[in-house]
Image (cartoon, rainbow, N blue to C red):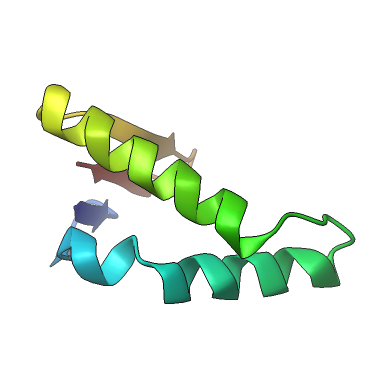
Length: 80
């Protein structure tokens, strides 16, 4: 997973292995964070989503998950 951010002058890229980013502990942390915002989803459901996402990653290389452009020139995207 590659996370890239640019604002014209500065570029930052972070590479995260899938085993660190999409594991059960991350799913548990996401479910706890969502409970604080009154969205109730179990860690098991989030983890099953992660497993399906990993399957799609293996099928489709260079998949862009998130892309954002702002008016002041900030750009952020996440590719798998």
